Image (cartoon, rainbow, N blue to C red):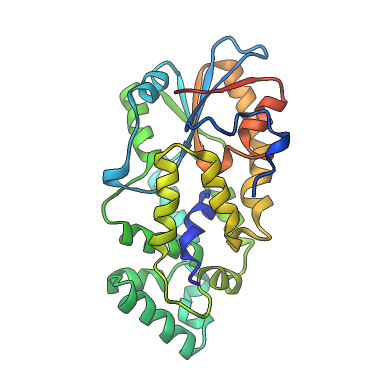
Length: 292
């Protein structure tokens, strides 16, 4: 079936079958927000699982979440989204397909016609959006499709960034945009196309997206992770996009949390599981508990 459905989680991560017996984190606790304390920390810090893109009407940030956010001195995102204009222009160049090529250059005429018909006729995507999709790397084009199908949307990273500015909190990133683009660039355009679209383009990617959204709204990280793992779009790239990044983040999180109380917001798929950030922090000796 059409693989747009999970690529937005792949991206951010962009771009998202648990072995639960080894976990010290309570599988039954449903929360997106977790407190990190102990192990020499003077003040607790918090880690929050985001969904990078949600319909406007489904966005929520509870009073308890806001209360804990306001106790922190710094907001930590996967990347600092406060990007200067010059860098924004550089990023746009990286988003585009290389050498001015179009997606149609990587497909046969028959494949592209089928893809175009699916996007325009079945999904009813605007022609202006399809023109953009034809110019950019497939994994990023997938997010444009989800964005349009979802209607008016909000991004947690942008909303938290606004709240940080309001509270005069500084913002930092655990990694750079260049690093994240590098992960995407490790996958050939041809392989990205295979990840995005297979032969029978008939389903609606919003069907699977909405199942994940419901799990997210219930703050059920473990069901969300199970849903993500059930899709094979992560096969072969899970270490690069999830596991290795989780491990790389731990010393950075430790260093930041020792300096001040921080509110860390990363894709919800990074939190649960034996390779997830919650378990890795617990393994390092920190107390990690759900905030209700």
